[in-house]
Amino acid sequence: MASETNQLAALPNRRLGSLIAPREHGAWGLLLVPLVTGGVVGFLAGGYSLPLIALTIAALGLFWLRTPAESLLGTGLMHAQTAQERRTVGITIVILVKIVAVALAVLFWNGRNLELLLLGLIAAFAFAAQAALRRLGRSTRMLSQIIGTVGLTITAPAAYYVVTGELNSQAWTLWMANFLFATNQIHFVQLRIHSVRLRGWKQKFQHGCWFLVGEAVLVVALVLAWRFHVVPWLAVLAFLPLLIRGTAWFFERQQALLVRRLGWTELAYAVIFGVCLIAGFHIGY
Image (cartoon, rainbow, N blue to C red; front, side, top):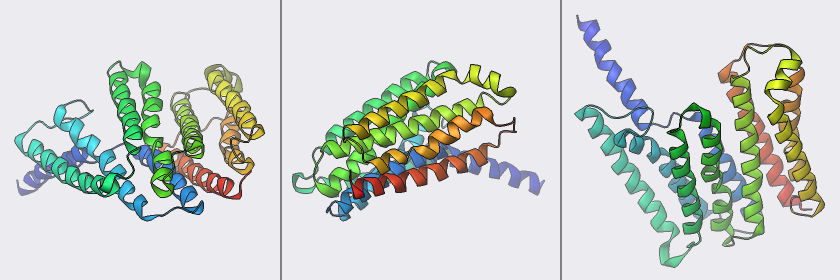
């Protein structure tokens, strides 16, 4: 009897964790890699790193806030049902709001960093559009993820801006580079998930033809960006491992999909991309 009671008591604890903690583990990388690349590129360009700490706290707090807010409003995959759940979720929201408020107050002190408001507006619009697309069902799942990535990768120009004080063409280029990289990752992961039962390269090509088209368009865009001195050559090469792994998959033998392994592999690609992107912008054209 006592063991059954303990088991019942443990269930709400696990459920509460899901109600207040972000479950989209891949989104952490989509948020942090642009934040780090934008901040480091700005710092290497002669900026100050201290404002980046406040931005990081604000960005992580806002990202975390989304899950308990959706749980309380009932717009997410899970929603608070009991009084205990609503109380815990509510307390979490209050704590996160206070942390974010302090971080934002530091960022905007004495009228500084006001152009962050524009970037915040873009992110808010992207997340609102993502929420609307989610309600349409699974058919718009990948599109909703890509739209949400607009908001996550906006941390790249935001970090560059608070470090350097300039929201210039380099800041926007960092955003576009991170967005294109993240979009390719999302498309590839969705392709892998929905092609588990495919056999042979012919079936893979039929199912993944649009992914290959996207790869080709990305290559052309990167070459043009390098040719017209928009993106440094080493930053262009940062995409090379991603392009190779996407193309090579079509010729690989059928293998069981290990989701956790796929996640770690994509994280490794993201780290390599971030390092090469930073080096590219630091070395120059």
